[in-house]
Image 1: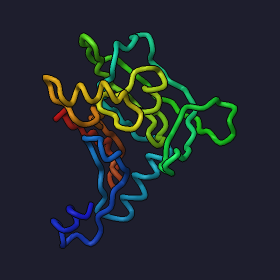
Image 2: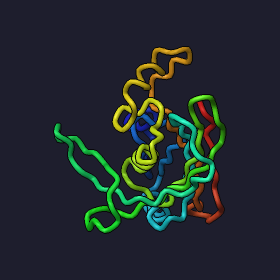
Image 3: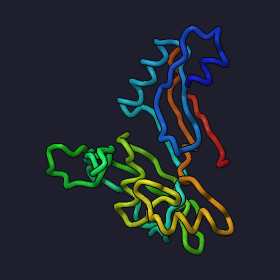
Length: 186
């Protein structure tokens, strides 16, 4: 955001509408007016937006597994860093979380998934997929460290987390028309 502000010094207002984890690529929405910012943030909160991610996971995802409805709990790990984990629904501190999963492509040892968020919790996709036994390739926090190391050194040399915000749709804050933004995989 600071680089964009420096590149557009004439812009009186420029703010992130939402965020992505640092390791995630893809669509990132910014607002040029406060009224647009609050309007689209309200759409995010009221689930009026559609967000779809591409995630490459370790292993073969079962095509019949389409909904993950596991509550998530924010905690601190031994180093004092924020960590999210799956929790039972009856845990009063956990928050209800729903992720939709669709197989896009299957490879020998990995599956490319289209993942749609129905709720927007911190690290939701990463924790839900890991909870199901299919960590995201390259995930430094919830992933399989030995597999990540092999992937970083292997034939394809993929050294970052394979999570990409590929689609975002929302209603334009001024005109109300539906806007669909798509970012192909890098």
